[in-house]
Image: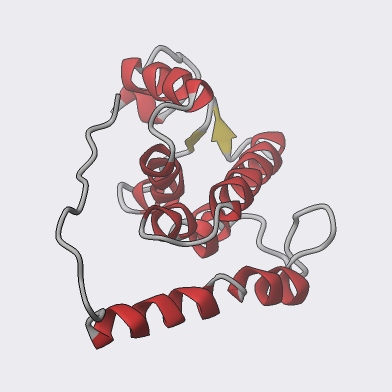
Length: 150
C-alpha cells in the first residue's frame, strides 16, 4: 500500500496561490486535446516525420503522468501510456528499439526517452504491467539490446 497523508487542519479561506494553481490545472487539463488535434493522426502517429528521433517522439508526453500525480485529469496516464506503447511499437518495427530499449547511440538520448516510462511508474506504481516491465528492464536479460551490454 502506498503511504498517504491526510490534512486535518481546516481553512477558512484557501490561500490565493492554491486557487490560482487549481485554475491553472483546469486550463492544463484541456491542453492534450489541442496537441492531439494539431500534431497526431488518428492512429497516434505524428503528422510530421519523427522516425529516427525516438527520444523526441516520447518527450511531448513525459510530463503527463507527473501532471496527473499533481492533480491533473485522470485521463493523462492512459493518454501517455497509449503514446508510449505506440512509439515503442513503431520504433521496434524499424529496429531502433530492441526489447523496449533504445539502440544507445549515446548515453543522453536513451535516458531522455525513458522519462515517459519512469513517469508512468510514478503515476501508477501498483500497475502490474508496469511492474513486470520494470522488473524485466532492471535485470537486463536481453542479449539483443545494445543497452544491456553497457
